Length: 318
Length: 282
Image (cartoon, rainbow over all chains, first blue to last red; front, side, top):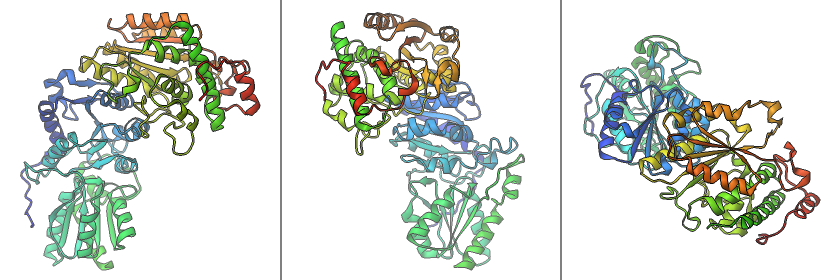
C-alpha cells in the first residue's frame, strides 16, 4: 500500500525527542537524563523542569557524562544522554566503546545537530562521521529518524529496547510528514512509496528529499520506490534485498560521509547478497562549512536534484 | 564475612601467590600493581564490603559496590573475587587464556560474577562509580560505592571532570582510593608527569581526603572505617593510599619494571619462596 505523504508543517526533529523524553518521564520511572550544557538545544529543559531529581547536568564534560550514564544502568536506570552529535560520538568514542558498547549497558545516546544542517556553526560541529563510528561498534543500535513525529516515536521505542542505542537527529525545521501516532519498530525499514524501477534508500532528513525526488522521477516515467531506513543498524536486510530484487538498482541518501554511513552498509549487503548498481548521495570525503542548511545541502550534493540524478545514473547502469 | 587482622594478612599472602602464579601461567599480565594492592583488596573483600559473593547481581541493590578503574591489575581482583566466593578458585588458572572469563582486563562480556563494567582504558572508572552512586541515591539504597584508580591514571583528564562533578553534586556515598605507588610504565610518576600535592588538589576540588599506608593492615582497616564514617556528610571521600609496586617480593619492589612483565620459572620460584601458602594454591 502506498500512502501519500504530505508535509503537515515544518518542525525540528530535536523537539520530537524533547517531547518524547518528557512523556517517558511520566511513563517510565527508571528513565533518567543527562546533559552536557546543551539542555535548551537538546530540548531537554521540559524534562529537567518536570523531573529535576532525575536530570543530571554534567557541565561541559562529555566523557564523564557517558561513563556516568553507564554507571547509572548498574542501578537499573535507563539513562538518556544529550549533547550534539559531534560530542556524542567522536569526542567520547572510547568511553562509549568500553563502558557502554562492550559492557552492554542500557544507555541511550541522543545526539542532536547531526550533519551539515547544523548550518552556520560550520565544520567543527557538523559531524558527518557519527553513523560510521557508532555502526562499527558491536552491540550498538543506530537510529536516524526522518522527521518530528518519527523522532518522537523512536525516542519512546528506544526506552523499551534493552541495550545501547545511538539516536541521531537534527537542528533545523524540516517537513513533518509521517503519522503522528505511528508505531516504531527498531530494525524495520518503512516503504514510503512503492515503485518498480529504482530503490531509493534514505535516512534522516534525506527521506523527504527522496520522496520529492520520486515525484520528479514519476513525471519522467521512472517509478521509484522510497524506503525509509530509520534504523541503520541492525539494517533491515530483507526489506533492502526485496526492494532491489524488484527494481534492480538502488540509491542511498544520507547526511553523512559516504565512508561508513548508510550507503556503505547497503553496498556491503548488496555486494555480499545481491550485486546490483548502487549510487550514493552523501558527502564525498570532505568537511562541511558555514552556511544555511539548505545552501549546504545544495553545495554538498545532498538535495532533491542530487537524488534524482543518482537515480538516473543507477538506472542507466542496471 | 569479617576476617580478623591475622586472617587478612594470611589471605593477602595467598592473593600475592595467586597473582604471581596467574601472570606466570599466562606469561603476561601486570604483577607489580597487583601485588601492591593485595593488602587493600583483601581487606575490602574479606572485611569491609557489605556484599553477597554467592548471589552476584548486576544491579547490586542493598550491597556495597566495587569498581576497578585501573583494570590492568585484574590479577589481584580476580584472586580476591575467587577467594571470597564469586567464582571457583580453580578458574584462576584460565587467566588470559583463550575462552576464559578472566580476560586480560576485566569485562562484563563473559558474565564473570563480580565485574559490573569493563575497564582497562584508563580514567573512566571514577565516572562509572559516580553513576552507580547516583543510582543508589535515587533508589534510596544506603550502601556505598568504592572505586580504585591508579596514580598514573590521574593524568587522564576525565578523572578531573569526575572529581568536579562528584563534589558539586555532594555525592557522599562514594569512596575513591588511589593506588599511589609512584610508578607508571615509562618510569616514576614524578618524572613522567608529576602529580604535585595530590592531597591539596582533591581537597580543593571539595573532597574529604584521607591518607593510608596500603601495606599496614591496621591502618587499612582503620582508614576504611574512617572513610565509611565520613560518608553521608556532603562530600565524596578520597583515600590516598601509599603503596609499593611489587610489594611482597623483594626483587619486584619499588620499580616500574614489573608493571607489565610476568615472572619466568626461576623468578616465580624465588618469589613464591617469600610468600606463605595460607589457603592452598589453586
